[in-house]
Image (tube, rainbow, N blue to C red; front, top):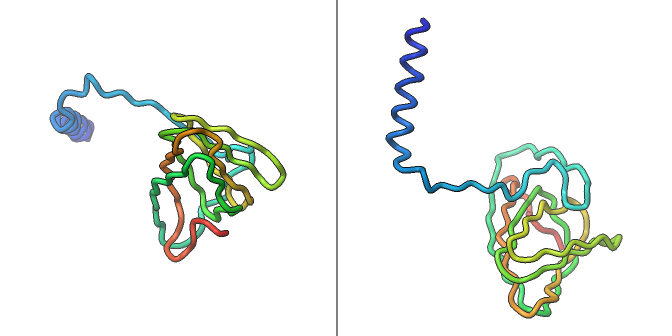
Length: 137
């Protein structure tokens, strides 16, 4: 039995190494890992139902202000260009600059505004379920 397990492990290692090719230049940088949103609140449990992932690229022009809204699903993003300020109904404020990550608020009203001079561009990943909205205005 030990030989079988050892054989499986060695075979798996060889297969993975062969498929990976040259990985000397691979760099992994953790941008976010949290069980809380940016305001310190615990993230809710994932909803029941068929999971559905949505990935959006959102471009917010300089000077633009988004409508107040909330997200009923867990989501996180990375600001890839510009600046963005997120403000909650109870006036908690988060300032983001290019390269910053955000674990967004869930079921808490907020809005974003671009106070910078260039378009803010953010990639956001939503972990929702089929037929459930990711944003509610």
